[in-house]
Length: 245
Ligand SMILES: Cc1cc2nc3c(=O)[nH]c(=O)nc-3n(C[C@H](O)[C@H](O)[C@H](O)COP(=O)(O)O)c2cc1C
Image (cartoon, rainbow, N blue to C red; front, side, top):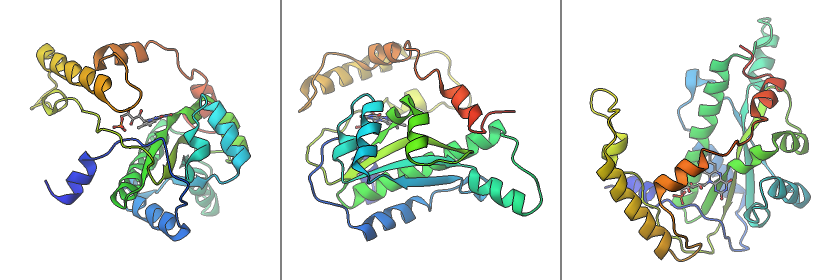
């Protein structure tokens, strides 16, 4: 393993931070590094909003289910899929407005996710830590209003960044054999491998330094997908100019 792979394998989400700020030039370099991610058709369909207003942070933290790290992190960024800029240049070039195609929604959503993960990895490589915040989609209308997001821009997730104030153990991932399929999709599940992974995750949850619990990956994941979550998303996205055809 080289240093880049080691940095990737060392990832853990950080939710407690020291009061130390992140220098503005450091943040700028992290964003610039994020931008080096590949981009579908090179459309670069993303924007990042740096949220520094404490009241906005508090309202977003509440909307996200009361996640205090949104208030406390040195930086809180909202990553948006952005077709506004591209729509504007289509109009400028006399090509009309974007129709709200599903494919463009996917391209923009993938672009922003690749970019954001690059930012997090770059941050981790210089001793910072952070966590993605999908919880902002609990109330995407509020987030859009607070941040002045125009049509064709939607908030995909947030990200807290700062200097870590907690030591967290790395969370084990599924065995490679479960996610890497040879030649064609292996529909036959391999119960032993998932059972062994469940045992590893159970150990991890019971022995980690904070937030100990008794659970395993299968039980937790099956329960998680039972919830009817964020059912407002389709109507919200369509109202913002996405997923119309
Ligand atoms: C798109 C996305 C949204 C997430 N949303 C939240 C969130 O709202 N709050 C939170 O505390 N963690 C959130 N996480 C972090 C995951 O819980 C975390 O990555 C996962 O449990 C694996 O743990 P690790 O990152 O420490 O390895 C999110 C992660 C992703 C990729």
